[in-house]
Length: 455
Image 1 (cartoon, rainbow, N blue to C red):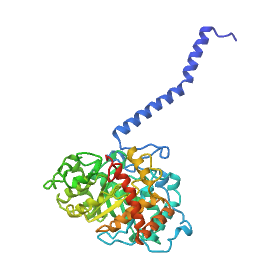
Image 2 (image 1 turned 180 degrees about the vertical axis):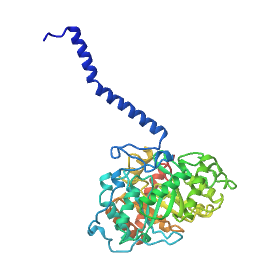
Image 3 (image 1 turned 135 degrees about the vertical axis):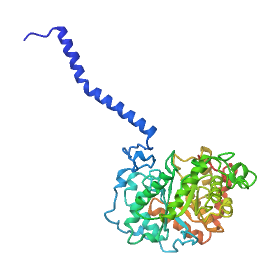
Image 4 (image 1 turned 120 degrees about the horizontal axis):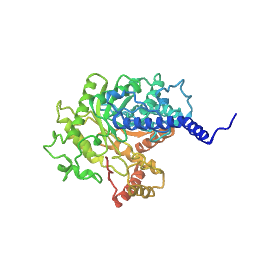
């Protein structure tokens, strides 16, 4: 057989490369199509979050419903307990007084279990899918901590908590504890207060928590949705109660003033929760957020808007802690001006700020973080213990005692919190001296009762 001519060889090689390149073209085309779809999805569809642990985080709500409810790792959606973990010594309360109920309209315990710890902000998937959450919940219930705070925003928290409580239903039936969750926030920058999404969010929370009613549903982080009214976004905001009331929208005569479109979104979402309350799906309606003047203004607005019913409950976080206790000055105004039925304080450690290793995502500026380190040097013992004790003492000594929401990741942390609570009941003179020294450091550095920006 004769050898191919040079021209024939070049032709064959050219065609061969073209054929061999077909798979490469297919791959490149697939990547481009996928990238285009992804960009379009982000621009027009429900917000989704792609992470290593959650490669396909499909929503449980269909895209054409126009909602932004984020799903979580499917391992949590399908997770069940085949059997309860065996009781060890650590799974039973240490002898002594149990956490009491404070009575009142909601009959909440002095300590509420903060289930925000059942999220990747605080714990990895391996922890959340193991037995520690269930054991922590069981121990808390045995100690008398019979109320739980969670949110649609806290990743798998509702699922993990719902599975644990369902597994414990024989020892602790649904009637023996309170369930409190939140709606309206579904991602770091994802908020949807539309009535349709509020309703779908609550219905999904019912499903995830395996219950047919919720004791409380909060509108989550209202400051990100409402119309902003404030002369500054950082600092000590107690001036809103006095000389700068008008600048914060708290002047007499402004009680029913809707400041803008954001305020109307709050009112519309609140109205939807009122409808669900009448349907028996919700027992109490509340609101959460960070800036205290904003919470007070919106609470007053709700009271002065038809049907002129006050909030049943309001939750403030990081404002009744060792570094910032300004909630104490606002409390009488929430009761008297806004007629709020029940107040709660959360996060005695200020979302981990008052711990040896604050989370990297914490909004506190570097100088405040330095102030925490310097404040910690004034106490010979465990600064975390001192900080938790401060919040327990303050909530317990208020004119109307407040439930304190504390996050727990393990049985050890539950034991430690109860231990501190018991110490406070027995007297706290040495602690009070330590608290004063710690707070003096914040005062000297200009960070006592100082609030960071939110949003």
